[in-house]
Length: 333
Image 1 (cartoon, rainbow, N blue to C red):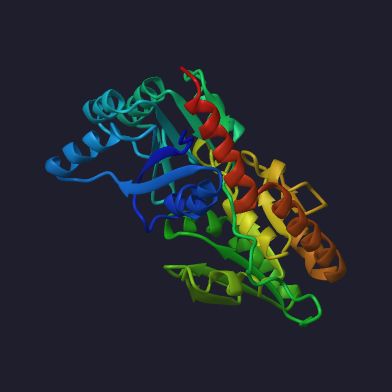
Image 2: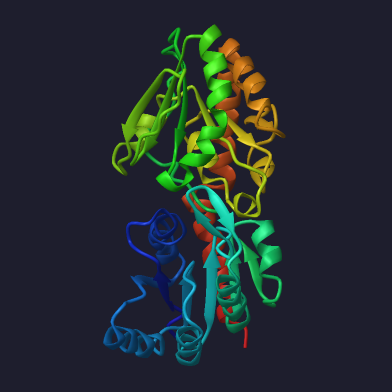
């Protein structure tokens, strides 16, 4: 008897970070556990959509990943699917534009419809799980980060200059501006360089900055050059839904993370162990100053961070969690 489970992931786009982190990176792991999984974006043309709906019939499980479709399309996918799941890792029920968060009634209605229409929800953290509570089957599976064969921080190569860094998409650059006055103040007393890895630059007066264009091929080696990684966030509903992927990237490279105490960041980073958790944006100044002045503490935290990520957030660990969840849901009537 063939116990292979056939799964189709309907993703946003092959090039988007969420599709890569939540789906594409995990496909080889799923194959190890008897899950034959494919990924495809939801097509724009009607003829291609009809073809996709029919293809759903051949699958044991269809997973809609972070897409909020029209009521008609979600109903059709539900109709053609033996079992339909919804995966999301962000507060997609809110809308972000140029750093401003708005609540869209239409967007929330689509979200609520999707939650009710699916047989299960896979979410990135406990806050998102609470938002999906109308669904009877909610599984929390964190976003996974690569830990195999990546560049690691070389603590034997100590420089006088302390490199503080941030990696992210242009959409999240407004969050980074929150640190500008504190970085400028630190720059007056310490020899620091602030590096931004993104597809767009940003200006921060008074801060010694270096912009590094983002590339999937080079981001890991660039991250390993940081001494400290930062993840500032405002205390908003949109930010609270984030799954801490920046912090995980820093930690995978063996770097301490300094993060805002928003959402589940304090679960990923234990304060004073793998990094520092800041209740207020103004707390970043003291946290960064302390780590700048104590390189031996940075090294201790960085090693602990790497260990934690390997045991809880690696692709191997999370891939098995996802495989176990899919096997369990496939057996439910």
